[in-house]
Image 1 (cartoon, rainbow, N blue to C red):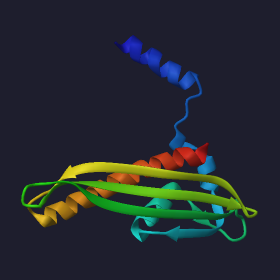
Image 2: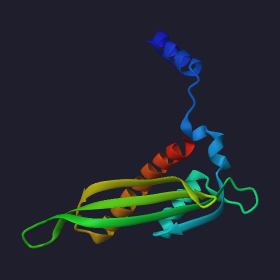
Image 3: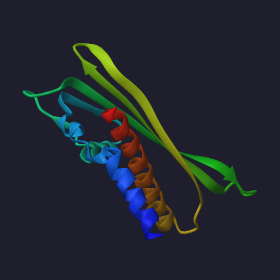
Length: 148
């Protein structure tokens, strides 16, 4: 078992493997202007976790536009019309503009299905946790996309 683990570690370090999250090129993403649309909390957490910065002097690109939307839809109801389950969808539209041209453009979307809870406070807390998890997934996809 130890030989297998040792062989695995030698293979990983010997092949030049490097995690995407430790790439220093992502720290160089500085924009002259950052435009955010939609839910400010979602955009704030996306910007802080991806190291996107605004710098009017030493910028790499002119402008980045982040537009997000969060929707909660009822997916099923019981015979009394009370919702039994919901679907939360978070969508992020990204545009990077330089010299008036769109350099990168992509839409990221994540969704999650969950059941209704009797206690509305617990439902609100659960929805907040679901939203944070969806934002983390979109952030991971965004980091990978910006590193490419």
